[in-house]
Amino acid sequence: MTEKVTIIGSGPAGWTAAIYAARAEMNPVVYEGAFNEENRQMGTLPLGQLSLTTEVENFPGFPAGDMTTYLDTSIQDDKRRYMAPHGKHGVSGPELMELMRQQAANFGTRIVTDDIVDIDTTQRPFKLKTLGGEEFTSHAIIIATGARANYLGLPSEDKFKNMGVSACAVCDGALPRFRNKPVVVVGGGDSAMEEATYLTKFASVVYIIHRRDSFRASRIMAERALSNHKIQVKWNSNIDEVLGDEKSGVTGVRIRSTTHPSKTEELDAVGYFCAIGHTPNTDFLKGQLKTNEKGYVVWTTPQRTYTSVDGIFAAGDVADDYFRQAITAAGTGCMAALDAERWLAAQGIE
Ligand code: NAP
Image 1 (cartoon, rainbow, N blue to C red):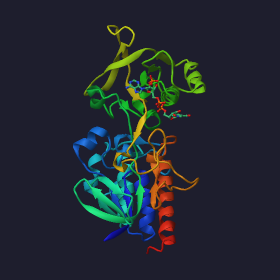
Image 2 (cartoon, protein in one colour; image 1 turned 45 degrees about the horizontal axis):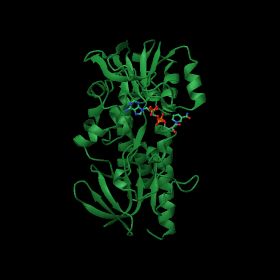
Image 3 (cartoon, helix red, strand yellow; image 1 turned 90 degrees about the vertical axis):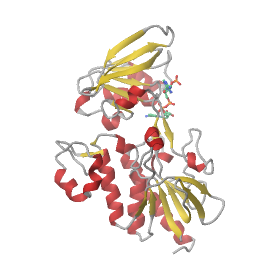
Image 4 (spheres, rainbow, N blue to C red; image 1 turned 180 degrees about the horizontal axis):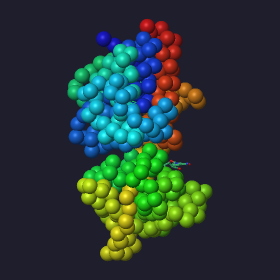
């Protein structure tokens, strides 16, 4: 059987595309990714980056409050395995993703827990191959594989993820653990400036740890950060280790001078925000779609989710290195489903 539309990826873009495609009777299949150690290490497990965050306070429709009853009746029990402890919170990232997944399934979306490892774009319908070895064809494809945050790769970073280590200040910065306490931001680009400036709303002090003596960030962003009295910059410094314990999570960092490598310093901090860039998940495309200089899939037509290959559409962070929000990903997921529906109709594919 040839699929009408195959959606690759299981973040907000993928599930929103699936909800729209399923309601339009396109009988979509979602390849949500494989649960394996490689994906865990890379931060690319099913349900995407949101499944690695804690509370989500900025997705419209999910105000803070006790969501227990709603969640109890909305998601199957066996999907509660990721749940954050219930309490006075709106919805957690993992819960939000399970809700979207369930909503897509409710309309008949078929879900396959496997990775797509290869697409042959030279033949129509397109030929796809899974990690598990399955091969199939599809008339249209929506790429919604997202991006992954870059981390330094320290074991201590991994140990305290969700316990003070984050790569998204907008997602996590307002959490109670960071209120009126010192935090660190690693990086010297616009993201680091933006995250540091944002975090000053909540933290008592924000240390920017940067490996050189000048920022890569645009002048306006750098000046905004440097003029903020809550921000202190530790120039020419690398993170040696994130310090902490099982109970409290992050309690500080040890930094090492890049100019005098024997010189180290320990800083007290309850948060560690890594802002050294993101990498789009496009390896499986093997260069077959046009990407920008940073590797993100290019939308070839304004206000459309078309890519450089007719019949392949892109949605969410894999094609967006600028907004990178759950709600914008969901929005472009909707657009991709509508684009695919109209494209299939124009091809006369029922
Ligand atoms: P970026 O510009 O690539 O900057 C990454 C920063 O992380 C650099 O300062 C780099 O140091 C540092 N870094 C990278 N690897 C490191 C490592 N292993 N150890 C220590 N430091 C490391 O990435 P970005 O800040 O995420 O920005 C990405 C793009 O989005 C940019 O084009 C940016 O302008 C744009 N952006 C715009 C806005 C805005 O306008 N509001 C906000 C965010 C991002 P070096 O400088 O030494 O290389």
